[in-house]
Image (cartoon, rainbow, N blue to C red; front, side, top):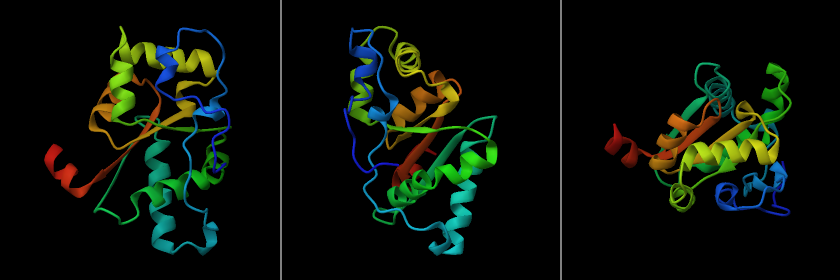
Length: 171
């Protein structure tokens, strides 16, 4: 996984850009800010939690996961370590790739401003990148994005990162 975006295409522009050009899915990938830690050097409890996240994400019945914690406790770091070690999990399920796309509230506003909104976004994302739904994992801190994707995202995977406070409010 790379730590920088080359030829970055804002993920929300997939549905709003009126050109039909193909987009390299690598330009949509989430930027990882933390350094990958060797899997064997991670604490055992951390590795177990990464395994649990993989189990949730690759569950054929859903592929949805919540990462809940207090502010500045390492939720983003945890997700980034999962992304850094994704090849380990892909090999176990014999899947070639899983592309992580970060969507925030501003992206949702831009997407929802278009007719057909989320269905069009997913259709365009798939046709313009050549990815299959099951090869896409959205990462978001926005309840609206997570909710919309859970309805219109098809077989895509979703990691919803939220604080304990927000979790208590939506429960």
